[in-house]
Length: 102
Image (cartoon, rainbow, N blue to C red; front, side):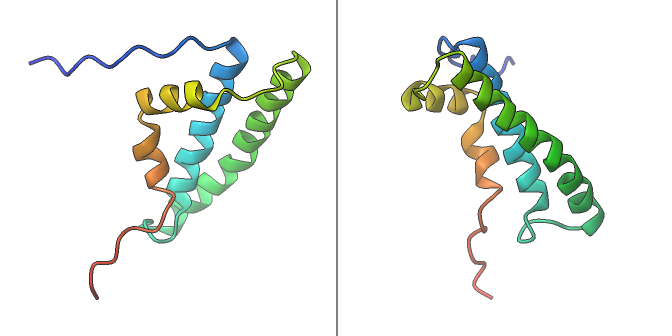
């Protein structure tokens, strides 16, 4: 059985696509660092080390957009792209999980 077909990504500029990719990388690393979800410190250490470089890449993607004259962020379009790329689930790992009642 084939998995359901995902909706197509909205049309993005190359800089917007770079922004989305770098943002999701940072979100994924923050999810791995999240002390409310982590199981071991070593994985958090490795993710924190990688975060520095990914945050720099995110800054560079935004800087490039600005330099190219892309001064407005089209939030609705970028939110659609994030949804297609599973951004809601990935960003959910950054937050505190629901209480288990303990």
